[in-house]
Figure (cartoon, rainbow, N blue to C red):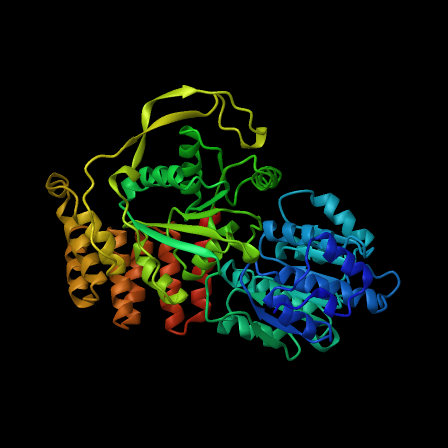
Length: 550
């Protein structure tokens, strides 16, 4: 039975904010965190997005600030509480939640992040705030200018700590922690989707004997999410997507692509066939970004396409579907992506499309989440393609979500013909290669010998015949030493055989061929981590995220 907020001794002004937000019973993470936090103890919590962790630390912050006297030295400007988030979207959402929950507290709450209002934000900080929510870069920029002090901080919150590592912010976090009062003179919170060793190390490094809390660790993915996976060739992925959109009729759909240019291209293609779609990537102007997000939240935008850079920062209620147009390259990103739906006890659906380019990630994803993703095989009628002729129609969408001049044209969807049936769910790589190899004889005759060896190698990999897979991949590389994906697959096979130095060398050759592919850097990071080369692993992961941000 859930614990009611009334069971805690909370200030009246905090309870009024909780009531205004429509909260009554605590979520599991709130039920675990609040009794400890309200006693002044440090908390390191493992919790997915959408579990209510933000409210847990905000209620704790407000209660402490209202009940403890303000000890800031006169003339010293600085926040009493500091919340650090890895992305602009997450910082903005935490601030919105803080304003809602703390509306009756009288506390001054502000948010600072890069991309907008540089001078305005600096002047706000000069005047002084009680609760500061910020991204690391902008925060350090202002601090080093002497705009505010950090010795005033009584409460520190590090949110999405694992993402701080992934995005290369960990040095910034450690720098900020060194500027704060000692751990025993402040209360600290750390939240992360996973309590990996590197996150635990950070917790013990910057906290005072924290209590570890893990909510439902046996279930990595969020409850209420219906997962389904389709194996498909890359060239038929968009036709399958159109069929799924028509079949599912989702009201608010969030899609993920691995690369910035792919997200932008996907949004453009959806607009051309008449869907209300926009993409948010790392180089979108911040004002435009917030405008797009607002349209999506309010229902003026049907489909939002994002890269993983934004996947942790999005906090949107009533997302009916998450579609992984590209399987993520990092297993943890799968959890963060599908956590965008089925938030706070609601239900939702997560659809993943596995093609020959990204299916290598599937095995690691299923191992990480602890279960096989249910597979469905698409019937012929589910593959549709836009007709060449389009017809115009009026467009009354908000300006921020309109397609390019000329209006959106919905194009008639036509079925893609002659698609063979495929067998059951057997092996990660084999399933996709079975689908590819089941194409017509004429298409198989059109494949180059290099691709035949590569395809055979992937099939053998999926059957756990790693030595045989390596032999086939070597044949492909003998024909074309610049075949980056073959070097990558070779690295994965060597990794499976625990031949880690050779695996690292193979993947480094893939990177030499195409240094701009983030998947290659992510794979090398995984191998380095298993070799114990943690700094190198973190560097490669940071490069991967930087490439995805564009």
